[in-house]
Image (cartoon, rainbow, N blue to C red; front, side, top):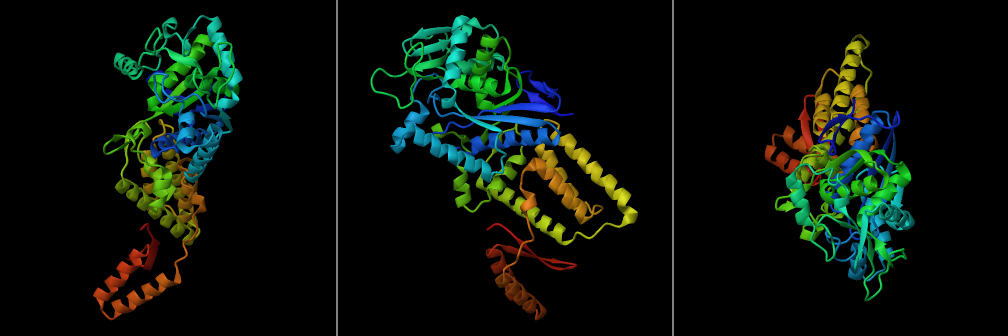
Length: 470
């Protein structure tokens, strides 16, 4: 049985979808004004793992992801510039060009990380009419008021506001994050529709019953989720930073308008942190995937690193940690090439025992991944299986391909590594020096081979050459 930690109930719950064998999944997408940093990408990897576990558990997943191309302001207090407008000024482009460029960059990043794309991509600017209709419903039901800079949601009118807040401490933190805008009735009230500035003209603005302007950030996900998955739907995901404001305000609007709690399961991924604290664009300490690629890392090494920590635990990032993940990934690739080279059929006398062992590994793997996506334990089990001498190479290979349906490390693409002739020649020279007992020279050749990205292992069955990261 699949169990997931539900932020709404604050406990692990057995996943029971609204429709048997189907799962509706909504994941908050990027605000496309700049590159996604690796902290953002950790959240998308966690959501991809969730999707893969659902599929592995035989659910047909309908996955929706939004593209925020308007309405996300630089402050949680519904003040400051629209991030897209700010990006356009920075790069001297139109907001539409900014949105298109960074949407493509984001899709390239998730492709590099082997993250499955959603069934439906949907942009905020494609749902302006739907957002206006939702605001009209909220207005009719008495949940809105108008001030000089826009139309706001009155949180005091909804008794259940703050469902996701764990404690009063969370409530106090939320209030501290939102400053009072002149005319707001309550600190937690949020903008549904913002008016365009009286001086100057925005590149993205629309007519509305209340005045020319643009939608608030928190409204878009409500209409996009309902438009594609209905209300109520199964699962809504995002980063832990969305709990106190963004997701709280989504729930508030849906409940005020329709009397329902929007989504049944709310899952949140923890922060990626650096030695000096949380990674954030506002702090100027961000790292993007392209930075890691330029340093020679395989993007999937970052995915492997993320698999090593539970999605609800903080993950401390460092280049040394990433190097460790790269080495583990390279070792895994090498093991796969060895398994494909040694795929002799198993002894029929032991077939029953082998089959029992394989089924045991599959059962344990399923138990770990269905226990709130416990990837660290699943990863450890994989290595245990690889080292298990009772299981033949062919069975190990099949298990690895099966496990990778969840891990997403693209293991099926690993072929036998072709050793360059130059390296093979150096290996021969080393053997000659060893035979002549010139061990110092042999060690120098070994060091040169390693410098070029390969390592030699002397085994009982002969010499093995492995490719490594340099």
